[in-house]
Length: 208
Image (cartoon, rainbow, N blue to C red; front, side, top):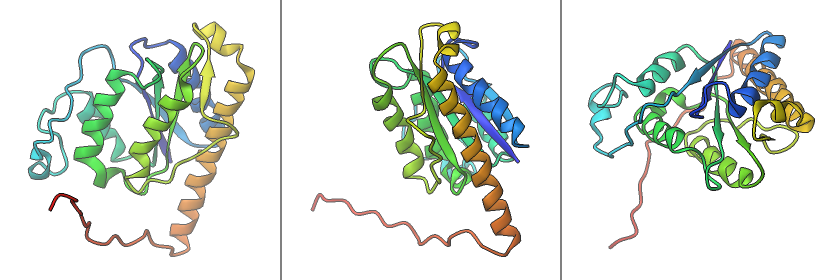
C-alpha cells in the first residue's frame, strides 16, 4: 500500500513539508509506503473547462507538468493527502490550480481512494483553507480520512511547527487512521466486498 502526499507550498522544505513528513513517517511505521511530491515553483496552468481530457483517456490537454506526474503516480497509489500553506484564508494558488486540473481530468482515477487535506498556517485561516481542500474529495466519491482535530499545524518556520505538539500529534493520528482505512479496504476486497456500482451521472441545470 502507498499514499501520495502533495506538498503545495512554494517552499520545498517549509512548514507544510514538516507536517507532511510527520504523516509520512507515521505511515511508514504502519507499514504503508509514502511519497511526498512537491509541486515546485513553476506556474501551474488552471483548468480551462475545455473537456479535452475526455478524448485523452483522463489526461489533461496541457500535459508534461506536475499534474501529469501526479496522475501517473496515483495509478499505483492507494490514497492521497494534499498539503497546503494558508494564503489569505485559502489554499495556495499552486495547489488550487493543480487540484482543479487533476480532479477535472482524472476523477475516475481518484474515486474510492481515501483522501485527506493538511494545512499549515502562521496564525489564522486554517479551517477555511482545510474546508476548501476537502470539497475536492467530497464530490469525487473519495472517503475522507479525519484525525483527532482539524488537520492543521501552526508556525512561521519549520522549527516553530515542530513545537506545535498538538498539531504534530494530529498528523500522526491522521496517518494511523489512513493506514487503518487502507488495510480495512484491502481486507474487505479479500473478503469479496466490491466497490459501489455507480449510476450514470445525472446533471440538472436550473435555467429553463
